[in-house]
Length: 292
Ligand SMILES: NC(=O)c1ccc[n+]([C@@H]2O[C@H](COP(=O)([O-])OP(=O)(O)OC[C@H]3O[C@@H](n4cnc5c(N)ncnc54)[C@H](O)[C@@H]3O)[C@@H](O)[C@H]2O)c1
Image (cartoon, rainbow, N blue to C red; front, side, top):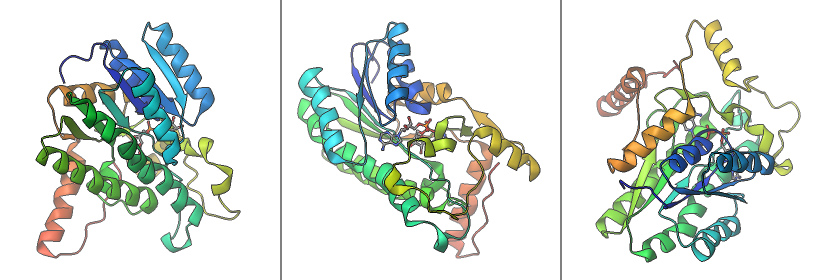
């Protein structure tokens, strides 16, 4: 897609971080935006800030863990706003799991899969038929993570498992749509090239009560990029971060270039991917990937 003028972009997780930056960047390109999130206050604040920037913005409360919520969002986009040409399945959380995998709370597994995995499936189910039915050039962008799609970091296996699963789904969807010469292009967006300073470290702010952490569950103590910076410094590593606005610009360029892999990567990540695949191909011991 080259011209974003007047195109409607629907963005889940649009109240904060990467989704919020996408809304501003696409708005600056002349797109209309429909942002969706469970964080009602954040959603309203972002909508107001977008409108103040003269961006044609609208918001809708949406919980991506339910199909009904995504169907309602698609109905707004197509039945009220004339159709969408860009859909970002972007909402995601990190449950902050810590300790031994076999001791994790089932609530962490369930909540993370509900949002990161089912959220993407519900988005695809709600939007794909409508996007394809328009018969016009349109794009579905799934926000994945190198943590799961490319590398298995041992510290966050719940998050990693969700991102590995949606990578499989995104690739299969891309190949299916390409084989059918569908007008819908599917893209895999990987925020980076470094850890992106967003609200994801404090996902607990939107954790539903039904998935609360049982008392005594080990915690990481990392609730912000600043906390992570301190932990990494303690381990002798420097934390380098990326601003979400940079991710949004990368995404727009990736759409212009029609890339499937919208995946800015730092040299350390590339090395870890190579080491992992060498280990697979050589059947040698797995390397231990570390952050940084
Ligand atoms: N920050 C990073 O370094 C990084 C790296 C790789 C991938 N990602 C991915 O980027 C995406 C965006 O995350 P972010 O880093 O901007 O974090 P963020 O916390 O700033 O934004 C995520 C948004 O999703 C919303 N959300 C959470 N649960 C929801 C639900 N059930 N329904 C609807 N919205 C919900 C949150 O309220 C929040 O506004 C996620 O998919 C995340 O996994 C982030």
